[in-house]
Image (tube, rainbow over all chains, first blue to last red; front, side, top):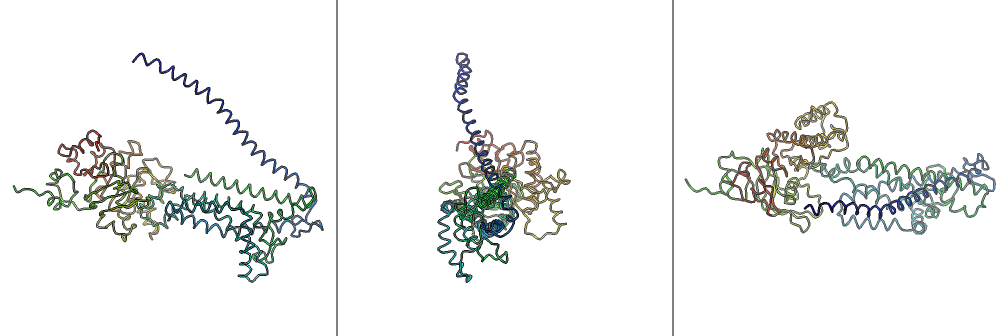
Length: 310
Length: 284
């Protein structure tokens, strides 16, 4: 027994030394690499924001009061961005209003009533849907959706706010369903079992346990979808009608309009670099970035708070 | 003295039906008890894996029945089958007959809500909802039209029954997550009692708490046996000896033997049961 005992610590120490030699440099390299990557990403965001702010700063002085107006006429030096802000806002709100209830109900249906096989199959299908390029959605919108809207509401053109909102709702639906379904499925099994063991009906378990527990994640998912809705360019540009004015009355969703992204998509290539026109478009993109970043930040806070609740 | 027909005797006493004939003898002289749960040739599967096979037994009313056996022997599956909480587990299926308070669980028509109102369950790990203590107690009564006074009465009564009232009556509106694990487990018991069940299923209720809290839960279980039929899964043999009236010994998905506490800890029980209960060793 004595013969073998002293050997053990030595062997152990040499193993530790070997381990130290092998892992320490690679660990510090990975740490440095990760830090550098994180710093680069942060710097890039700051750089983009800085460049946009620098470029758009002059627009505020050059365009003066016309910025807060509703007339967009570069020829007359009028750059009212309100129609675009309004267009973005109404399309986003309508799309979310349509997609969120359907998305949440579908996610609940999949996670609470269907088998694991159906769940996996539907998730795969939804991920495929989420991966379809937006131009394809745009073409479907132009070829079918706008025509149907025009037929149903007896309109001259179906390229209106409603069509853009419907198309956007269809586009963000897979994101909402996938994320909220994950949120519902991640509610800890003991919560469900305890609720069912108390004799609650499935509807009551969903209302009293699943939804409150997944609330943070669902709101986070909604904000992420909102960010996507706000940033969507191509599909919206094809079906919104591109009219730089606030509809009259303002709630008329059967009227054509313009969003920030569709405006940028149409005009950024046509404007001369450094001109007031170009600078105002950059200013609009800055507003878009700020809103999107705020929404993403809010979503992260909500995800975090939901995590700490668990 | 005429020869005793063991099966007739067991039927006559309408009592827990041990599978080893020797144990019937211990029933002689016992007070006849009503049956709370009756299983006949009950089997359960998870997919192709048979976890319980051919369990035939009766569980008496107003007694503490401890289910013991090594891990994976089917104890919890049997317990969870009683209030059909296993139904939500994918690919779970059961065969044979299982009736609770006369309610046949095999019939698809039997109402789960009706069953679960009669059978309360407390799980191994205390799981309180992130709400106030009061809301937790009343959680199973959602959807019932109860006045505020009645609610207060139910909360007080349930917490007193669970021996928790003195510790929490001044902070009923505080979050239940602020309670210690032992208190949370007693809150889970209070929550189950608020629904006024007839049977209380306890799945290792003291396994996740410290020994002091475990002891207080144990004495609470002893108090509750006067009003409820208690069926408890446990790995703690000493605890079983302290509190059980009846013991069911499961091994490899089969009910090996059941009988009274005295019988199961006597030399008259089967070799297999004695080996497990005395030496925590199993040859299954």
